[in-house]
Length: 108
Image (cartoon, rainbow, N blue to C red; front, side):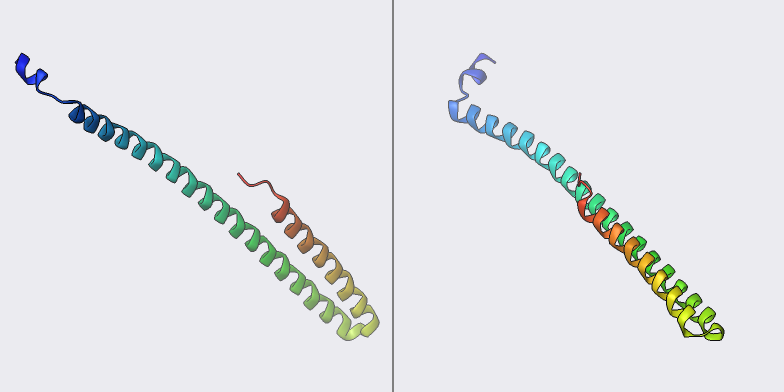
């Protein structure tokens, strides 16, 4: 039994140490890859949510335009244009606010 331990060379110890080191670094590398993938997924989710919000605001703006056109048909063009411009101004400010919020938001 004692002879078996005496026959192990330094290169075998070195090979064993390198194997253990490789396995440990591989594990920690995979943990970091998972964290990085999760951060990227969260960023894509946030980007998708902001795009959906912008699309919803644009839809509301179009609905306001439609309402303005409907109300302006019977009342004359000045009242319809005034309502349309107010709706477009509000919609533009809201869209601009969402874009600024999405761009300046601190990323994780």
